Length: 162
Image (cartoon, rainbow, N blue to C red; front, side):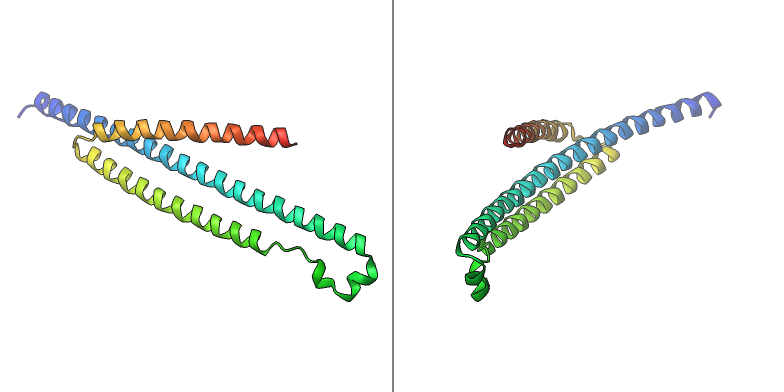
């Protein structure tokens, strides 16, 4: 073996490694994008759920305060528990909805990372995953567009409410 054949062999192998490494990076980025969209969507759901519950609690508290104000101090002092807002259902509902959203998000994230890891492993080994990557990329783009649209609408609603 001469030096030239060794150099050519090393170059060929290095090209393969570089190509696979680029594929791994691309698949990793797509996986992170998919995970990010899941997290953004879940956080938006949590915020909306808890803001709605907070608004409901504020309304209940205001109604209770108005009732206490109308009845007077002496009546309120005799039975103060009657003037507490009935917000238990709102708090429990928000908790259950939040728990469901977090559970759903964790399942989706686990699935996304598992698929991503499988694709990264296949890419590193040189197996064909282009079709899977392209399909995943299309799904990620669709999910990101939906999340961006929802975020824009939510921001517009907040601005309109203020």
